[in-house]
Length: 239
Image 1 (cartoon, helix red, strand yellow):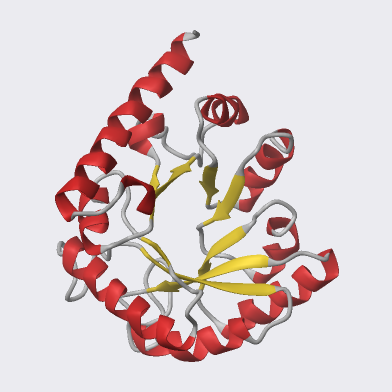
Image 2 (image 1 turned 30 degrees about the vertical axis):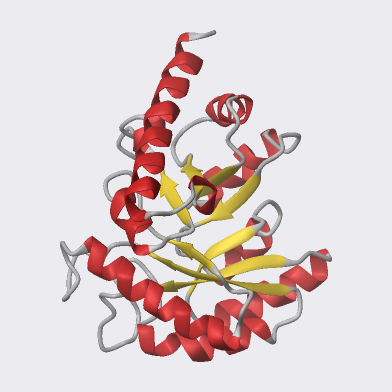
């Protein structure tokens, strides 16, 4: 085993222990929570090692990095999630590799995703990104739609050809009433998920929690956690 493979295996084991303990504490089965490893800024070689170690879900947030990396790893049994703010001019490239877009937050993006999914003959999973720090413009500092906009956006996705409404996603906010209150933010997301599933029963995916707060997300009921640095190490600064 190479040094890097050993390092990643050890880190994965620690994250697995954390998720297992969090599930036990919440009275949940371990298989109710899926680990997504966020591989941004790390090379395709690391993605290949992660695949060898059993990881099946990876996430990226910048298309210019993700597209060539995904192409290099196209032969691996991976589900690719796009989790960054997505501009409409990047949709065609992103749908070349992404199976799920977790950052859908506006009607114009729904239209662009649908058009491209149909052109490519694909069905793309979509999560609505909810922003608990949304200002007067209805958008969050790091993307996302205000809670009040979820229902309308869900209807647009559900009715769009080539798209599948899978559920909700959030990032713990740095400002606003939920700043520093990750558990409360994730519990609010679960409330929104319950409301969403009354109209769209299959939209049961809830993506919340990262390296620092995955326990709070599992306790609240998240079905997917997005973990980067706890698996891959502290990221190098982007130049």
